[in-house]
Image (cartoon, rainbow, N blue to C red; front, side, top):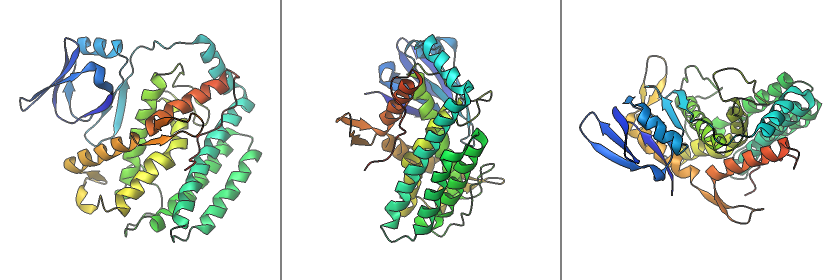
Length: 330
């Protein structure tokens, strides 16, 4: 089985025959068989060379880099081998023709909103007073069909998220002042975790896009600006409620994290190294969570659900089947 590897130590990562060799500053040497690597996340300072990049390209392994503050800084995205000119043309057409783009943008938002409602209804049935929010978000969803621009669709998405985040103080059984999403820099434990795990989800989706014929820079809800894989942002909207939000709720409500796991930076909070490693392991385990797929009738992981979503998008783009965004069904 292939795994994601999270590298925290400073040192050197190089090719040793067909193996990745990690040599850390304290003299420790670890060999990682290349066949076992799914993707790599680098949080330490590593020296690398072209021999390593050649091996990573050969085995089509993406490497995601983060800085000291655990902020994403970039991805080594090997030369693409899953090329499809026909799909690229269709991707571009669906971006350039407003009605086609609007349709996809609305579907990403409706999929996200449906999964948000699923989370709210779950906690509502467990004694949390969330009826008003459920009604308000449901009403916002009905407005989506009337939107005639991407900016207006983004406005609905923003209002849904704002309403949703306002309920987190009810959902989370901790006395944490969390009134709104603050990104730069995240100002409390919740905002810090949202930033971290949204970023990790974004990178997981980049890895999955690389394994398809999709071009990651052409998107529909988010603008395809330079220096980002904006299609990953579109797809992440659909999966945040399941993979990120529920994970954060569990961390707090099952007492797996508290103030002692964080350290104060200049104007933000950052997970301590030991806590970060522990929680990252839990997040990786969450991506390996399996369910029985209701149409495929076989067991799939959360991580593979992302790949399936990309295949559904491809079928939509080539006119084979209308895209139906992932919705939590259990």
